[in-house]
Image 1: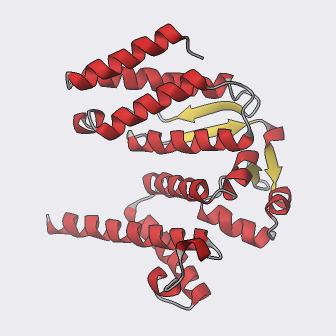
Image 2: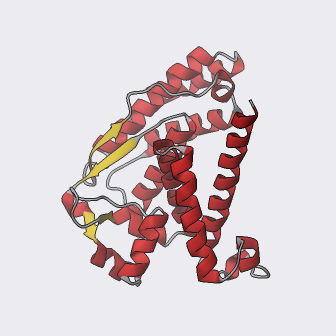
Length: 254
């Protein structure tokens, strides 16, 4: 995907941009690395991905973010990943690559990204449930919480193979859900999102018979949780609701 000369030159330009605090240089290198990451999906992951659709809008990140240590770390990380990627890639490693890229994409201010997969890379709901050792009812719960799925033109939902692998990884299953919530937040009005959050929180409250996640999981160590997904999901929903209400309050006050 990238030869050593190009890698070294890009690394040097990133270093120069940050040392000179030049957002124009950093923005240019960001665009370049983004294009190389997207090309990797088309070339290195062509056995899984047919194509990717991204919104045409400009990224909304500020000069402050562009010059931040976090962004510098992300640029170097993705430069390394593009340089080092080799086919074939396992479903799990592809899934981690995708989740990490989606997270970065939204951090940059991206609005919409959609993946189109090969038909043979998609599992029927029953197949995914069997592989995870869960019922179809539980699978639907996971889909509602953020397990990646495709509607398959309005018929039965299909699950990408990597999503099943990611559900076995606590860290990445949570990240997958967080990206899903970010996507929904960008697509919905605050009122629509708040209504949906309240519905999901009510389901969790009824399931555990407690008002808050702190009460529901009081005294249980993180490593001893029977279903850590519920814990992190409940926590994330609570924080998102608080943020929406805070923004709404500030808007009303102005």
